[in-house]
Length: 451
Ligand code: NDP
Image (cartoon, rainbow, N blue to C red; front, side):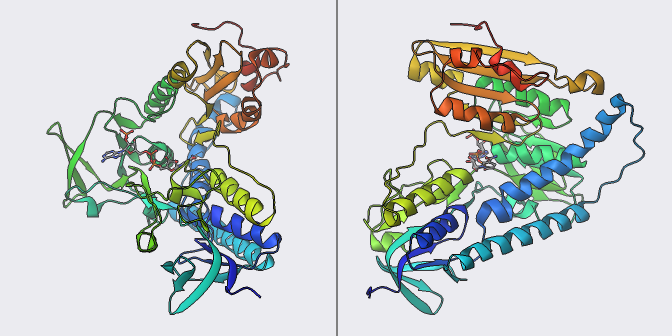
């Protein structure tokens, strides 16, 4: 009989923690998990899932308009934010239950507490202390906001999902994933949206064409994109919130949402006390097997700040459990991870941007196509789709695909397998397209724009 209460104890029941716990239990380990919020983590409770539901809701505004070009006479429409939030909350409740059942069915014991290390094998949970042979830190992250005067009047995405009413005028600060996605949500649902970003083009780190096209398309839809704009302070007024900007001007809105990045949840875990190495940014330092500086303590997901995406956390959690409890050594490969930004129109991307590809590979071929999607020939909407292929000249391997346009995330998910598998431009060329689709463009681009 083991000297420990558990073979594995997991801190945090989000995507990575739950997957690791379940798989470890399936391999025969005695597993416990703790969570002081709702089981499911950021993705399910206040991230990807509710966000995507709101994106669907926002898109209806355009769908009603576009329907006219196809002969539909759409009468007056009305949108209810409380109805949407109620429906979204019901779905999140359902998913929360699913997660609880998954844990229970796999025999994982759940503690509704925030855990704190007492020593490298013991965790305090409320008044109780448990011991475990191995411990997995999967505590995720939370929004970070800059410390400027008046920041207490603002919200983050955490609160945006639970607003009692839709703000008439909203300022979204930031130019990353969350800012672009929420600017699109608020805009589609009827708010007047100002997106304030300190840089010269949104989505830093993405391919420059993607950044340019997203900025243009967002503005066409009515988002007032204020680039190279810095907020210095925020003041509550009779009419709402007044933002003082660095150029001396002011902007008045009803709600300000900050989306200026996320940081790992490490505070209060006692990591420093037991000597776990943590980066200055807060992320737990791990090796390719997700092992921390203490051999029997592991970490997966956003708390490690590797690639902060749900499917990555799930893979890391699964690989950890297979490696340690299933006897299958599975380092996680973080190359060619596809991702999407659910702004409107959405972005789907995998692999290197043109800029990064030039640095890593030197000589590359770039194929680019921008076109009006078939649907908009009748809808009349002025929206262009961008598709871009980046090819390593020496090997002819496809090393980057970037799309801005309807269904981009769905398209890129499939093509990511080809990129991950190292397929070449010739493989793409000999694949027959599906007509008429937007995706067929990816297998019919013939001439590089520059070598
Ligand atoms: P991001 O890192 O994507 O973007 C942060 C933004 O805030 C950047 O535009 C950044 O500007 C800006 N910023 C940072 N500091 C300041 C400051 N002091 N003042 C003003 N602006 C500032 O973070 P998000 O919060 O959007 O998302 C966090 C992470 O969550 C993402 O990186 C992603 O990994 C994940 N995520 C993924 C989603 C998806 O897969 N669809 C959806 C949502 C989140 P600059 O560029 O100049 O640094």
